[in-house]
Image (cartoon, rainbow, N blue to C red; front, side):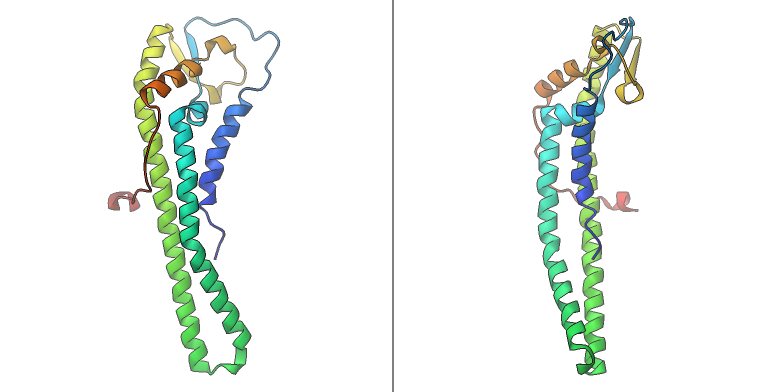
Length: 196
C-alpha cells in the first residue's frame, strides 16, 4: 500500500509553524521608514501562533494519528496475506491461489478506498476549521485596518523586507485569542456535493 498521504496534513501544519518562524529572521539594521497607511498582515503566522490555530494543528495531528491507527491493520493483514501467498507459491492449487489473490486484491482496493475517504475527510475538516478562523479574523482585520489608518494592507508572504512597525499581525493574533480562544472538533464527513 502506498505511503499514507495523511502525513501531508502534519507537514502542512508544521510548515505553517516553520513559515511563521522564518518570517522572524533578522532583518536589516535599518528597516527603513514606516510608510503611513501601509499595513502588513501575516495569515500563516496567525494560523501557527494563535490559540485557535494551535488548537487546530494539535487536533489535526490527533485525528491523523487516529486515521493511521485505523488503516494500520489493513496494511498488516494485506502484507501478511501477500507474504503467505508468495511463500506458498506453486504448492497451492491454481484455483485456490486465484481465489486468494482476488480476495487480496479486493482487500487492497478496500484499503485504498478507505484511505482516500479518510484523507478527504481530514482535508475537509482542516479547511472547515481554517474557514472558521478566517470568519473570526475578518472583522478583526477590518477593525485594525480602520484603527491603524491603513490605506493598503499587504499580505506578508508578498513582502520581502519591511519595517516591523507596519506589521499588524500581533494585534490581530491577540484579538483573535480573545474572540476565538480555541476550536473543538472531530473529523467531518465530506458532503456529497463537495466530493464531486
